Image 1 (cartoon, rainbow, N blue to C red):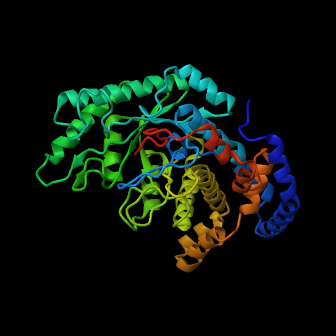
Image 2 (spheres, rainbow, N blue to C red; image 1 turned 180 degrees about the vertical axis):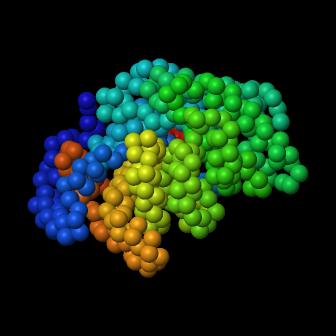
Image 3 (cartoon, rainbow, N blue to C red; image 1 turned 90 degrees about the vertical axis):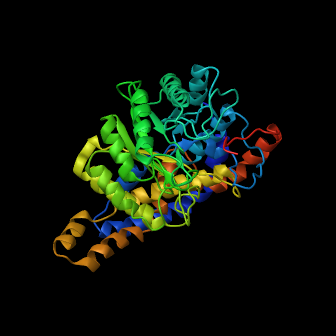
Length: 431
């Protein structure tokens, strides 16, 4: 297996940080011990955590107005995997990559699978794209894809999703994520009920092509590009469609795809309760965006989501296996740095939620002691678990401080020299 960054440099970086880390780790261990928590168990738990990377996330994203290319951004799927390899090497928390077709469509899927394996990477769910027209496409998606009035456009969209499944099977993927921008921008533009009927009819065709050990993830989004009525706009519609399609259809929750101040953790609890929580696209949001770095705006909400996940895991045991993926676009930061930081923040929330005293929380809830119940959660959230995360990385052969190690490696500068800018080439695929 090859490592994009020199292993000796990572070891040197860790050696410099180790003394301070061990001191911080011992101090945190003593504090947790007084709370009846074994820090070694928490560190071992942190080492099990994994969140998938979006292939498009390692490229520089854009806005509705412009795109500003970044230095050394990847120009093809192989270079995207190189960058993902860096992220996993330095965090050991991102072993899988989620590809987006046709942006990442390989000429030889087996070659791509072998290339990824050499970097220590596998593949998460694959993503279809029927929200934009592609070169040579016979039928436009301007007025919808899976919900289009045009039977030919719908058939084309179904065929594309089935093609994604076939490529994913060769790559070793086990899931298909379906998001459509279908909907309407004016009242009266479409019959709202008929639109959803066409969606379900199209999805049945895709569902029938799923292998037995695959899942279909239905992603919803409140608005954009359909600003009046989006066909799959909320978790209720997503849930109803997943129920209608069958056991292999699950709901995917993107943290940025909700109205401001929506109680996302309650959505998580409801979907988990009824066995339809498929997984997450992690990011953050302030207004109506869905591409900010995870944990950059509302880390408490991220913690509360993982608190519900911890409760579901306790209730449902090994049957509860949601899929985790980052889904972000980076305009003003180095995408590799943002993705590493986000992976760490999601892992942080996972460990903080594991610190919640669930017996005490249940006692306070049963006694209607509202303040103490809330404080029990806050006690876990306020605990700085950075030494646990850093020690988990150190023991896994990653970097104690991933961003600092990455910058010291000069990887971005080397990529800039090896990947000269090319007009029209974008690692994101979005703009």
